[in-house]
Image 1 (spheres, rainbow, N blue to C red):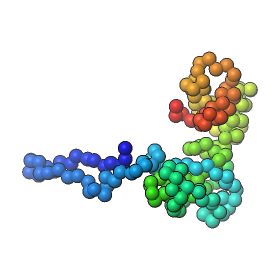
Image 2: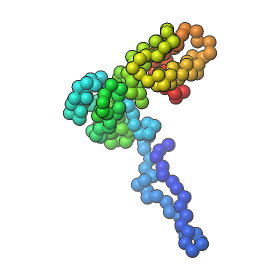
Image 3: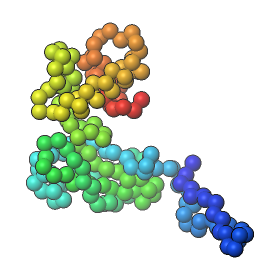
Image 4: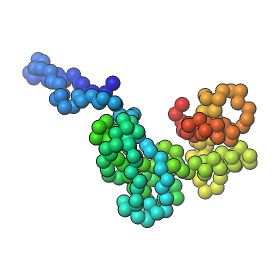
Length: 188
């Protein structure tokens, strides 16, 4: 399985078919080890967000030792990408690296956050704990967002731990987190 670009083109000139065209061979390159989904791998690292906010692109990033896809030690800087985090008035610049051997792009992300989430893990857990104990959402966070987390967690508990899980929603969150899942994501 690799990246392939195949298309079927028909040129019609004066009511008849003229020919077929295939993409050049350079576009049909196959990888020895195909990159991860979408070609991006997220590496979680200790990042001081306040310092990152102040220094922006001058933040001292720690380069990964090797590519986590093919174990190559040759990693190149691949620029920065802006990412929104809750509590900051503008997006923060996160560093990316590229492996020239497999083509995988490694994005460094703070380990206090789930992949594709703007809110810290401890805030999400506090929200679920508050809802489980008092029936109310945390103040300061949009209730709609908290409701999405709660519903996604209930759905994941049902899918992974079964209908018979009786230890509570907070224990389910901790159990799924310990198993390596993002407990509040909608993906199953």
